[in-house]
Length: 270
Image (tube, rainbow, N blue to C red; front, side, top):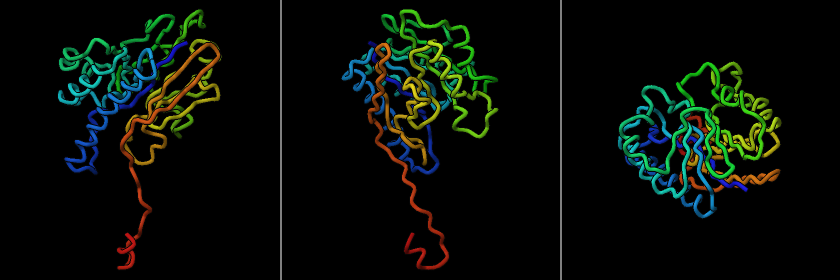
């Protein structure tokens, strides 16, 4: 049996135009608090490791203070953490993951997935990541990462991928798009036991197998994001799959009903 924690889209360093300076700092702090919370959840749930499926950072241009605060929070997670670079924090020349601040401050439990080479994360557990190498790629790296994979033999394989799925966008020819069919085929052909996704900020199941999921962001980033504020505990035991959401988010974005201002009475309503 394998048990791990699945998260993504922390967007550390994100700024929101609608916040005052004080509110922005509280918003920032909540995102670092979420990392510490998921570390406690991983420990209490006996998770073997944590996977972060892209966009841990809002961009590769985040300041050194944000990187330092992230590493301090990551240091408190008592199990190995595997981070997949996404489209916001791709593994290019300017990557935050190769910055002096990150490299010198990175705790020993933190690992960045640099390519699609299979990684032995634990006994009989293999991770295969599809890191983004630029903000706009000609094809989603998931396809190259899974193309040569053989069917599973005596190992539990988890694929980490990042990107929007064709089910959720009208722009079917967008760069980096994933298709639900391609994800399901990887499971059907037994190339993977589980596909862990990032990019969509709402926790979402793909298909009917329970083996393909977006974790959603652990802390809401905007209006209308759906099922946010969670991390997921994934248990894989042969044909058995259990996906358990755990709440970590502290913020909500509440949008009031629109009021058209035409007269003094409308002002009172507003």
